[in-house]
Length: 103
Image (cartoon, rainbow, N blue to C red; front, top):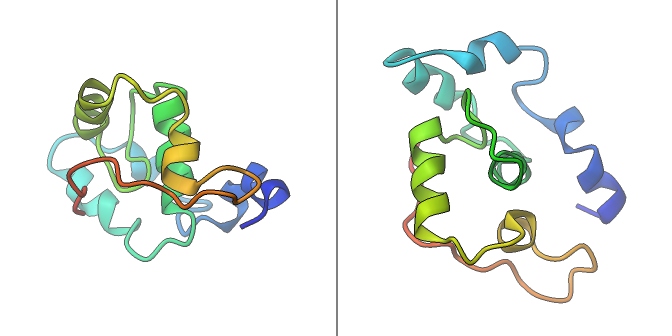
């Protein structure tokens, strides 16, 4: 995905048009997360939520609780987009950010 494409990642999201389903609560979040499986922009979505400290809904296959845990585990990260998606110029490979998040 190029820098220009990255700006418009949501247009390629598997959940496009189903926003209400992604703001489920409790047990229903597990169902909402299934929609993220195989999404081509899952990393960009998660980076958006982490970089902007979005507290509600399922983003990039993660719940609010999982995102808070990632933020606590890695307070040194200033750009989750760079970590999860790589720099815009593509000069460095994306790094792992710890424990994998399962759906």
